[in-house]
Image (cartoon, rainbow, N blue to C red; front, side, top):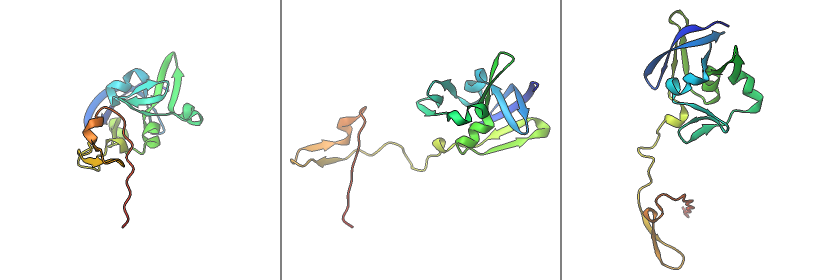
Length: 143
């Protein structure tokens, strides 16, 4: 495969890269991952901040390859793996990546409102008392 100039639009930001493409697949250097998609290749998978997507061993060759001493990442295969929409304009060598499921905010806020409830012994506890700690809430209703 040969290098081609490509434009990648991700998070509504256009980035020009030197890429490789075959049968509509977009391969970018692993060094361009952060610049193009704010992604980083780590031992636990492909990560964006604290969110990591494990790369299934059975799909490693579909997602990663080393060619002429350079590591390449298949951004379109990753988009399929994460259910991200992709549009490709071959004549302009442009790929558009839509919003990933982890970016969709279906709630108005990802922060739980503070509340205070008694425990079984009647002592009051507020959610804000546990700020910075992991909390597992179990609720039940009779209706």
